[in-house]
Image (cartoon, rainbow, N blue to C red; front, side, top):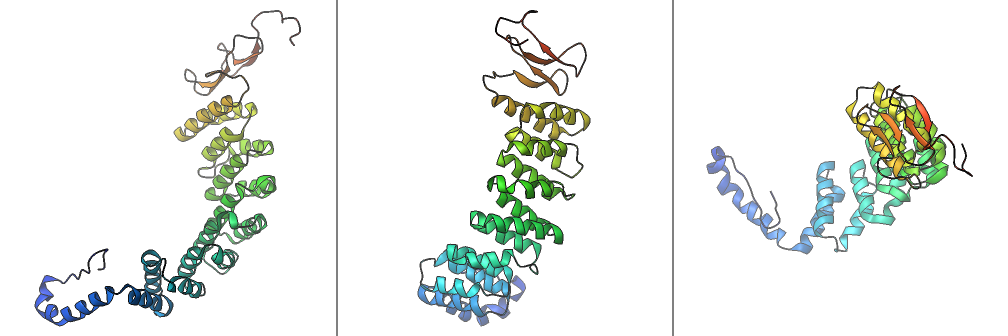
Length: 311
């Protein structure tokens, strides 16, 4: 085993007599070679390019990147590794090349014959360098081929794409696979578009795993007061502690965006789980009346509206 400052070789106790004398010379030769960094870098590069085992090529490549990042042989080896047959080797090499490796990552992201996990990893590695059109097309293909990890990665890429991502994300929100639908809900919340509120509210009643909590959290980021009662009803209907917490937090976040709102003005009251109240001393108070749970009323500070104020 090679560590930062030593070369260790573990020999089973039962084999000491047979192996120690025989292998010690070979071990010392390895140690002597490791002392020459230039020679070590060249040998690592050779192994990374030509070893028969993908795992060995990968480990040599990673060691070369980690220990010899400034050596001239590194970039040359990374470029060669972008054509490696093993997808993980290609991925690591392209990522290590930065902007120069984008074409390799794009090719991996769009390769329908590549395993779902490697397509998704390539898309994640691209990040903002993946064009919006590429993310939309990739999402559609991934949903058709049931590459759900790839779909999730495309959705995450679309979370910063603006209004052009709205329609494909709403389509993904309707997917039965929880990992896709929940990711779409999170992305829609990040877009903070008013048009996303209605599909997110509908998602509060869906059965896909993790979706209801993700939808509640998304409404907390981008919802209006129109989302408060649906959040209350969903929290009351399902015996899901995570959903109740997410709904309460969402209402608090919606309140924080109300002009002139004060702490506690809009809340899911603790006394009656999920009760909505908008407490204010001024006319126009919005509340759920205490006498009849769930009743919505407009309460006024006085029976008669002040002059110039709407009734």
